[in-house]
Length: 127
Image (cartoon, rainbow, N blue to C red; front, side, top):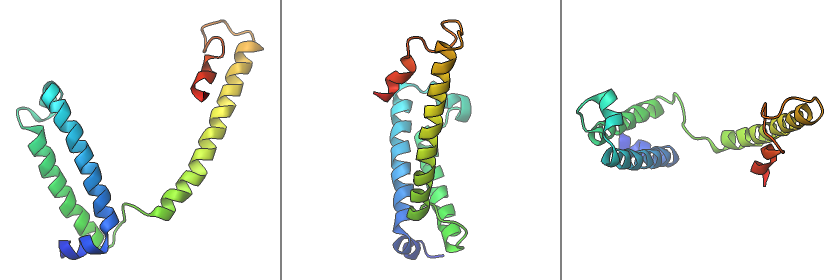
């Protein structure tokens, strides 16, 4: 297992892993500098930034091992495109059905006001 060779052969996987790690490290740092209490519940007095860096390094080694064994691939563009092409229209269709049923139940079934959104407020997120 040569990490240098793996990084050159699979740059997308490592780029995504690195980008996510840097983003989460930034959020962790901001939260730690503003309020230390959320972390103390889980890791005590340990510095969460150092813990996160250790986890990122462990994750990098684990990712390298998994890729070297060809066990999985984090990112496949064709799979992501397929998922978006099927999930997004399905979610939109289900959302429209829910809105229509909600409007029917409020307007025509005589449900009491306040049992759902009043005055078609449900449609505000569409604009």
